Length: 240
Image (cartoon, rainbow, N blue to C red; front, side):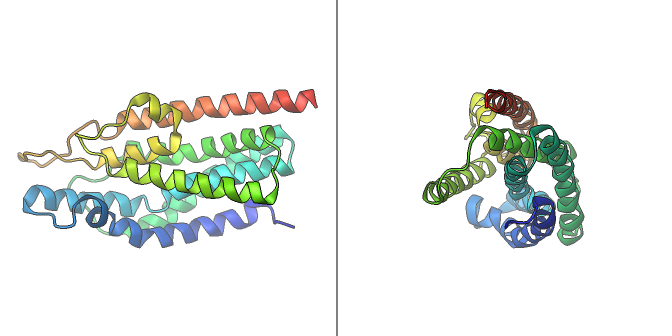
C-alpha cells in the first residue's frame, strides 16, 4: 500500500531541490548562451544563475504538489483533502526554500525577483488543491493508460518548462496560453525575471516586466483551474 503523501513528499521535495541545483547552475550556458561575451552577457549569465540556484526545485515542487493533491483525493473526502492539500503544499514550499537558499549561496547586486519567487511558492497550495479537484473528478485508469498519461504529461511539462525559461524579448508567449497552461506560466515568470537590456547603462538592470505578466497569469489561471476542477469534482461525487 502506498504511504500517505505527507510521509514521502516532504523528503522527496528536499531531494528534488538538491538534484536540480547542478541543472539550474548550468542552464544558462546549455540552453541560452554557451559563450557569454562582454559585460552585458556576463551580467545576464551571473544573474540568471543566481536566480535559478535560489529557485532550485521550485518547478518540480509545483508538479509534486499537484501529484500529492491528486493522491489525497483518493484517500480523503474532498473537504478534508482540500484542507490537507493546502497545508502540505505550504509545507513543501517552505522545505524548498529551506533547502535551496543555503545551497545557492552568494549574493548579486540586483538581488532577487522576490515577487516572482513568492508567487511561485504561493502556487504550491494552488497546484495541490487543483490536484484534489483532478483526483475527485477523474477515476484512476488502468496501469497501461496511467503509464502513457504520465509519460505524455512528463514530456509536455519538460517542453513547457524549457520553453518558458529560455524566453527573451524576441520570443513572447501569448498571455492566453499562460492562463491556459500554468506550468508554462510558472517557468515563463522565472525566465522573464532574468532578462537583461541589450544595451547596458549604469546601473545595470534587467529589462522587461520582471516576469510580472506571467506571474499574474500563473496565479489567476491556476486559481480558475482549481475552482473549476473542484466544482466539477464535487458535482460528480454528488451525482454518485
